Length: 69
Image: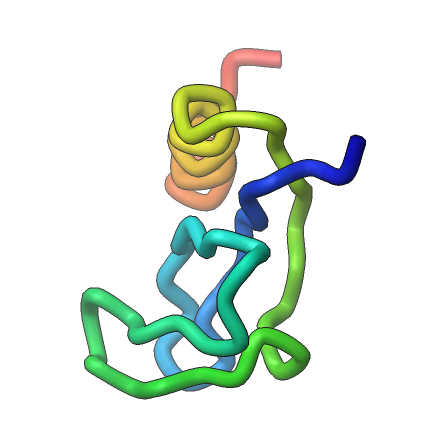
């Protein structure tokens, strides 16, 4: 089964976002840019929205230097 959600980075402002893989585009919640699904910089995919939100949280922590690993 193909993962339903895509965790990606907005190519315009760099915000992490979650996109439903069934749709052809996504609007960035920060810069309001309409981005085609094939323009998104995909970080990972997830089977459900909960997993996708966890991936985004981890990516934000790493970006902010909060990673304890």
